[in-house]
Image (tube, rainbow, N blue to C red; front, side, top):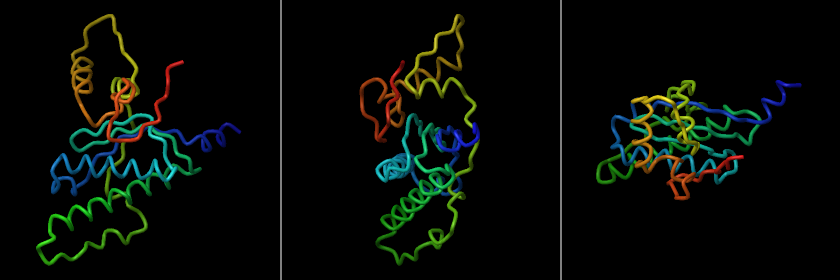
Length: 174
């Protein structure tokens, strides 16, 4: 019974590292491609984004899958990123004779990212809008607080009352 409950809730937190495609696209464009793909997943009602951080070539994501299978939701998100990459390449090469890459004809789009478990509690708490107070000074935590406080591609903005580029389902503190 407990296993079925975990499958149906669809809650997950993962870190996705962008693969080779990210080296060919400037950071601002990469961030917009990933943000747009997250928004499309939210608008299609497959995914609730509760927390995220797009940093350099990583996506820290805390979400809730509305599908029974989280992997199906993630593959649809990866497909949206693949479409964004393809669209970027077409715009970039519009004056050249462009031949589309056959990357969009695969069954799985997992090659877009390498997936890792989300193990950094500081980042997790900060992007969920929670404060962390330690009885001692931790330089690692201080750097993350400073970074996230002034960063646009992070759900911490939504938890502070602002708007970030991704539609976030703000989880209020109880």
